Length: 180
Image 1 (spheres, rainbow, N blue to C red):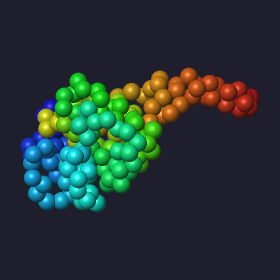
Image 2 (image 1 turned 30 degrees about the vertical axis):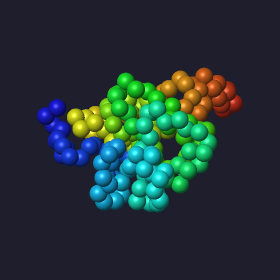
Image 3 (image 1 turned 45 degrees about the vertical axis):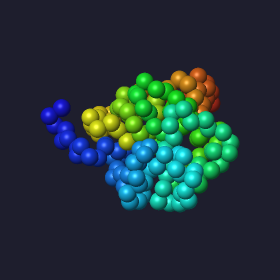
Image 4 (image 1 turned 90 degrees about the vertical axis):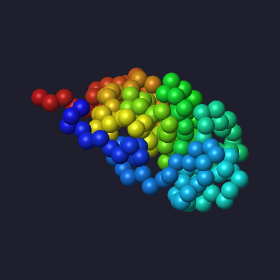
């Protein structure tokens, strides 16, 4: 799109809580040295290290999230979940488990092969940070966050299913006095 300015190739477009944001975190992949802080590092390195406010873990899509790991992650300043391919949906489950079963309240960030088409669904599962693939546009991402006006199923962002919301709206409408 000609009206959209390209972003720097060295920095991925980043959204936090539905807004473009500066990303101060450096993503460190397996086998790369952590050069500076703050850094998002592989889970195994984070578990071995001291963590703190300057280090955050990223979880591979095949991470088994048990109660002990979730308890350790509660202290993390953010948890990043890697999408090795956009077709790999295991990260959605990890985010939903972190939010709903384990009550994680910090940032859950999607990293890796993150496309704008996925954002609405990722947010419904509990993601609030999105490090988009380099070829994705922030303007398109912002539009895709609101691509659907309503969702049928309950999720992290709306625990009440649509049919219950409609029942409640109808019952409230019948209780309100009619205008003459």
